[in-house]
Each structure stands twice: as C-alpha cells, then as structure tokens.
Length: 433
Image 1 (spheres, rainbow, N blue to C red):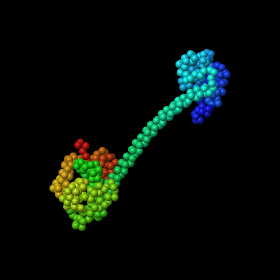
Image 2: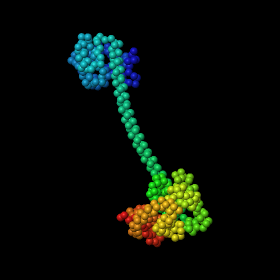
Image 3: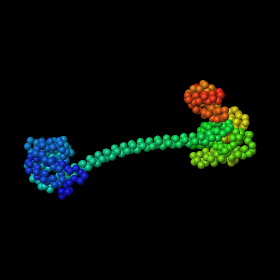
Image 4: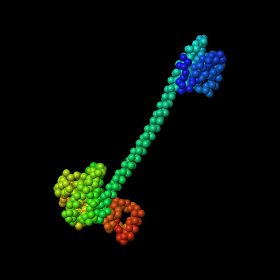
C-alpha cells in the first residue's frame, strides 16, 4: 500500500505540515507518514505553523481543532487566504462538530478527520488529497508547457516567415540577376556582327527597341513582346560568318552568289538560337523575318498570316532602319521616303496592319525628334540624355540613345574628340518637352 501513496519518481516529494499542541500526536503523525515518502514538518501552535509556511512550500496541512491562542479553524482560515494552494485537513473530536462545520465553511477545508483516527483511513484521505494536488500540479505544468510551446511555435513561425521572405527576396534577386545577365549576353551577341566592317552600328538595338514598342502598340502579350525584342536583337546573328566585303554591301548591290548566301542567314540564325529553350520562339521569328506577306519571301515562301506575327513586325522595322541607313540600297533614304516605300508595299511585302501601326507610331517619334537639341561636346552638362546613338567615323557605336551623361563621360567624349581631331555634336533630349 505504501508504494501506491508515493509521488511519481521524477516529482518532488510532497510536503506535509502537521499542527498540534500535543507532542505525542505530532510524533504519531510523523511516524505514520514518514514511511510513505512524504516530507513531514511539525508545529506545536498556529503561530509556529505560520512561521513555517512563510519559509517552506507546503502541499498539505493537517491541524488539530483545539489549540490554545489560535485554534485550527482560525489557522486554516488564514492559510486559505495566504496559501490557497495548500490542501487543508482538520483533526477534530466528536464534541467539536458544530465548530468543525463552521471551520469547513470558513477555511474551505478538504476533509476533516475525527479523533481517535484509524491509520489506514488517514493515509487514504491524505492520498486522495495529494492525488488531487498532483492533478493540479500536472494541469499547471501542462498549461505552462502549452503556453511555452505556443510561444516557441509563434517565434518559430515568425522566424520561418522571415526566412521565407529573405529566401524569396534572395531568389528574386538571383532571378533578376540571371535575367539581366541573360539580356546582357544577348546584347553582346547582337553586337558581335556590328563589330565587323559596314555601316550597321546600332542597327540591331534600334530595330529591337522599335519592335518592342510596335509589339506593345499591337497589343501582343508580354511574352510575345519579349520574344520579338530578343529576335530583333539577334536577327542578323546568322551573318556572323559572312566575309567583311559581303557585310559592307547593300542588298541591292549583291551578286547572285552573294544573294544565295544572304538568303541562308535566317536559317543559320535559327539554328544558332534553337539550343537555348528561352530563345525557341525568338528563333522562329528570326527564321521568318525575310518572308513576304505575298509569299515571295525566303527561306520557306510562307505567306499572309501564316508568317509569325513577330516576324511580320520585325520585317517592317528591319527594312525601315536598313532603308534609312543604306543597308538595302546604296542610297540612303530619308525617314519620309522610307515610310512611303513601306506604305506602297502594304499587303505585298508587309502586313498592312503592322505597317499602318508602325507609320502611326513613327509620326509620334518624328515629332519628338524634331525637338531634340543638337549640342557640341563642349556644351554638354551632367544629367543630359542622348536622343540618338553616338556613332564614330568608322561606324562603331560609341554611346546608345537614352544614355544619361555624367561628368566623367562628358570628359571622355571631349577627350575623344580632341584625340581624333573631330568636332563631336550630339542629339540631346529637350527637357522642355
């Protein structure tokens, strides 16, 4: 029986406080409880019991009813107010029943034990009381554990959310860097052909910018706009193996042998781009950008709306830039002459809808260009923005349009002009527009 009365092995022993003014009663209680494993404290009066309670944690207090100065009822009432967690049991005689009931009401006593008591009964009463105490302990422990785990979970969730946000931001930055590096690589490839001899400096970039604007004007989706832009940057990549003399020739001056080689560059361009999954749609545009709306183009003779819309856009913009830069004929056309030729070729060489949208778009661009400032290098100021590409005498692209000048760049431009012995003038955006 004794083993069943002991607290769990990992729990601290229960502490009992026995209060009685008769030493033999205290000795009897101590002998009764000590073998069970409880820690037993004793007090000979109510005052002594209060002193012990001030310095020792007590789980259960057993007090005699009849004691001088402070009886058990008064003591347990005080204990109820100051140490309510301590279980309270009253020892009383049969003659004290009225006082016992009052004490129960005042001190919220767990049980009372009549004198003389039976040891097994006392042990069972105490066991029952301490089992209740153990349940209260466990309940408090579980509540504290739950609160702590909830706080830890909240902290973990907050930490995870922060880590997810940080990781998402890192991935976005990495993805943005990859996209930027990819675009830089594309621009680098598009510039390779322009390092060769000829007057094509800036051609691919100009065509790409106009193609993207025209695709947006025709309300193509974002992916299609990007594909057209990339295809325009790389549409001449198939010419990378052309000899310098062929690159320098306008199309109208090519021999039949030269033309035969020229007609193959869309296929070579597609073949160069197809291995990259991100460029597969752009590769199809490159293949078809010399097809004609009337079916007389190359390399496949596709006609009408069978030609990818990106290729129909690229065909118009590419030829416009080639006409005004002397790449299709030895004579350079003015922008108005080039536009007139595009209009004449509606529904023959070009898609009429694409031509009309492009001419309308160019009308707005021409008005803006009319307001550009033309300044010598000595009049440049930081913060000015180039309205047109800056091209060297050899046809090399020095600075692209839309580039913002700073003090260092202005000094380099001026030093370049002095070193080459040329007067450099630049087209600058007019801030007043």
